[in-house]
Length: 235
Image (cartoon, rainbow, N blue to C red; front, side, top):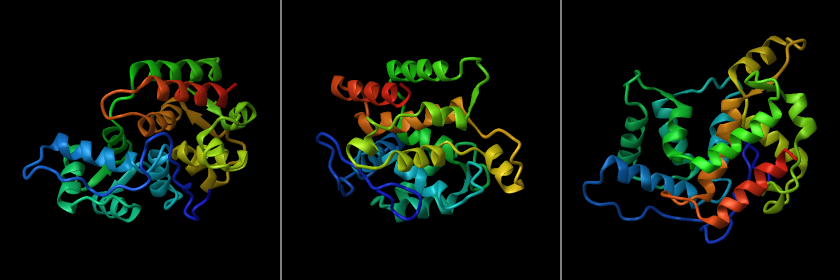
């Protein structure tokens, strides 16, 4: 399921549509309406849509530091396939850029806005799994240690997309890439330990949660699927 740009092919599950055009917004939509519509357009691209969107932006910049030019973000969303009036995309970006930071957007903040809140019981599950991996409470875990534990058998890219373990692991590594590791790689500091942080791990599974959920709540079926994926991924 590689696409050549570091992202993965879009998967669908349950009643999620593979394609969607912009639904009719009110003549004067609120910011909330626009964000809701944007969430809908992403979610309609499949269970891996939020992963795929993040990968689209991260794979284009090996030194990605979490900051992105406003124009690049807008153009990227359109290029990725968001069929929304550019004026509304501007307003969605305005919400993410509430502090008006001279046209530079915090990409993680934008993704959090786009995903919406992860249900508390899912958030707690992610935290429990992380704590089982980060046994000493350091807040980060070496990539080599995670690789030893990672099991892709029930991962959506495996079960729905027939991806190999290596492909699934490469996606996980791309989407949990942090600035410290990038700087180490660029400096060839091989003695340093490459790690995944707690927040990056949580973002990875928050993306999955957003791909499974309705905008308001998660149903029992998707809750069960989410639990199956994350617990089996880490044995």
